[in-house]
Length: 448
Image 1: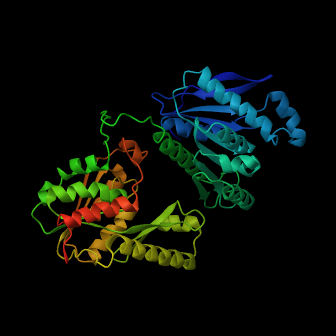
Image 2: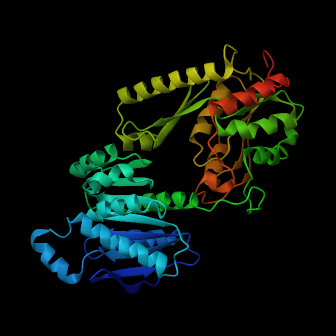
């Protein structure tokens, strides 16, 4: 399957009066540790997902929160596997072993829970917010975490089969009680155990990407002037470096458009370096009806709509749902246009070169919509520019834009924020300040 079989070391972890069985496997140069929590011996499904995570650079610790003797009695009435307090205390002991006794204490930790192990994972995350960087619930009973749910701070991913209707309802109950960043991933056509063809591969991919993304955000802060490989001090510094790769555009009829909000901070030094007009190009992500954080398309100025058909099918959105979301996003674009431009018209790009700038490109969905919007408004040449972009996203955008200019194109872009020392959230007021300053400098001209 994955062509990887790391040595799994059988270990024993003390948890109060009992000794728990666990399997530890560490690939070369791990970027984090995923602790698999379950009330029972590891299944073939769990081992498959753990192997997939190791293939992507994560160490794994698969732990049975019940002893062999307890499992024997639990088969009779299932009382122990539903004792969430017991499971959580034992999982806390496992995390303490990792941080206090193992050689992996320097790694960020994610908890991956199956069944009632998911509730135990969330309870531990609520008690150790400084330690647990991410949680994944796979066909889990997260609802049983009860009062712990609202105080969990770790980003939490719920994975459930599309045909597991009972599990989906329980996940929605848990989601409704949480305040942390959450996502609900529904595997179409899959049942409770993900036994259908390809379903477990999708579970593994989702789990790995969730952990990797949030491990990247756990990287320690560095001094403001410290070098950090190919990363950038902040968006302004990234824009200054990016401008040097765009000097061939100088002298053309040119408009630099940042995608709000972070893209505007990168676009501003580019516009100054090229003595070009600065504006915004407004784009809104089209999120799933039940989980808006998961994108299935984008709407951009220029009445350009891009949809990912597979994601739309996965979301279960009806044509009525889509129409309602598109109308909502169109209204948001109009409101932001009024906020950023007042009564001024959008930039006239007919016959001109348009440079669409963002602070990083993970998937390229919003930029695809922006490119099409610029084409519809008559742009003669469309350039996409960003300090960093996932290589596959950049390749996709090259099929739509005339040029794609990126300083770094990693094969696995875990997180855009990991490429910056300062990646604070840009406010609307900061965007307005940049636009107003550009206007005072003559970068925005009537009819430009």
